[in-house]
Image (cartoon, rainbow, N blue to C red; front, side, top):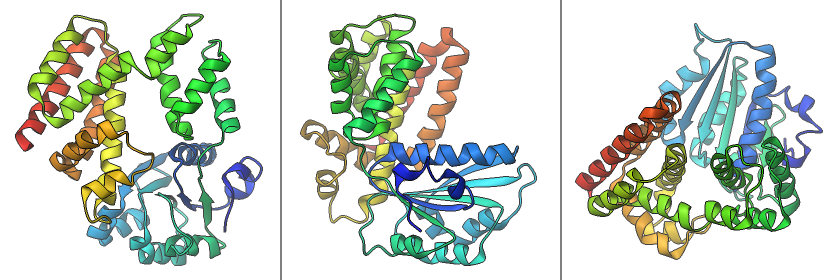
Length: 339
């Protein structure tokens, strides 16, 4: 059964009667928003919720473990929310089996990239009456403008038309990208009542972000000499550790996503050239090197560690610089050993 993403608010009472969802398309931000709406409603009626996330290859490699996750009860929760990342037609049989069994103790979300009309997974959900299929296409300018205005209203920061246009242009029509840029501005602004346009340009586009972005790239490529040069500059200046960790996390998530898609392409070059959103030409050789260095298991391990380091930095601000830089140094040395 198909529901358009813009109909969610109108049909949410109907939506909440189902527990298996396919969300496909380029817009990762709207997928997260829809899942959050459903999760919020689930938590109203179930105090104890267990959240689990799986990648498609984990299901294919161990089907028995996947079915145990779906059907086994939990001593510590009333319901399970299970998210399958990067779902494709390869798990069509597994999903059909679950739909036929109609489990009532779980809520299953399948996040997929663009699915063609001939996709078996897409066709299955479109025809099913006990499951929901939601296409998640790119946001239009009006959607992004409304989101930006709401987010800036939360921090009570004036939003000029020029700033709004800059943010929309930088978002690549994805609200997730937009919110990431607004988060950078929020972290920089603190309690300021106003920011000049040039300040915002620097935050979201050029100088500060460039050096931070470059630092993370050198780290992931294992370029120790260049990494040490930048880190020595950072030690002498005020650096937002949380922002660096968020940049690292975004790059990790992108690498994981591309690793998942790698097997569908004849070469890494072809994968990079056809990636969505489009990868800037200067970053292509860097990304190619990172894909060659890092395995899927190592990427996932780092993603879990990022969360721990971020919590440590927030709880102990006086330790944040040493804790985060030690973490980045460990990653750089590991990359250097692999390269």
